[in-house]
Length: 327
Image 1 (cartoon, helix red, strand yellow):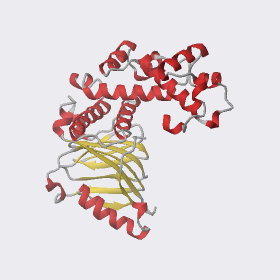
Image 2 (image 1 turned 45 degrees about the vertical axis):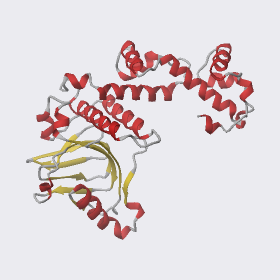
Image 3 (image 1 turned 90 degrees about the horizontal axis):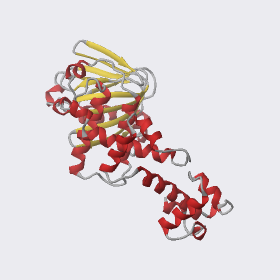
Image 4 (image 1 turned 60 degrees about the horizontal axis):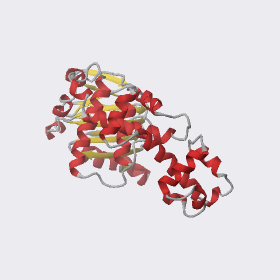
């Protein structure tokens, strides 16, 4: 869902009788500086996928019902990060500064690390959290009062999709993100989270025009193309419409990264066609059928484009190599 975020903790690797005690000590007290308790009779289960980008912590938590508390001795650790929480399944809630809140899928709320209180889920579920410093969040939002209140908000689906696409791009890179880029990624993720939480009407001008939103839109556009390029009618208007921006603005975003929509669409289709042609399992399929299945509507045009890109005809690569190595 968010690329290959590394698993930091998974209780299923432990004997059932040891799961909660280990999680309470290692995940709760040592890592997060919280007191952890289970709720209800469901056998305890918790899996944490997490990554650190500069000073920003991103995590996807999948769990049975639980609750964590930040007590007065625990907040003495000096951590003042603000956590923006987006339930993906189940409900999440808490009580802090005399206010209580419960949110479900499609909603969001906040956690303040420097205040006493408790948070958790009475239902179990899956939750995305992005924790950043107040200074970093403030630089991306004019509505800090709203963020610090812990209210129930409803981020747009597009804003959440932008976060998902950006995280997937980061974590599907196949290699470690260099330290200098992790700082940039942390800033951009915080910008996206503030944008999702406050909405465009409350976000600052710098956020609306910031690097995070631009990078996330490019990532979302590329992901959308990868999911729809085999549709012969798919074009730049479909992609821009999905993102809620104009065709010209999408082209500007791509051009800033040295990308042309038409060339990227052609590349996806041709590489998919070459992969299918090279797979011996597809020997019974006609070249025409494969071309059409990859989004081409004219076989002559396909043949010309294929030869121009790969220096050989479609028929010459049939069954010549392992398809997986060409994707």
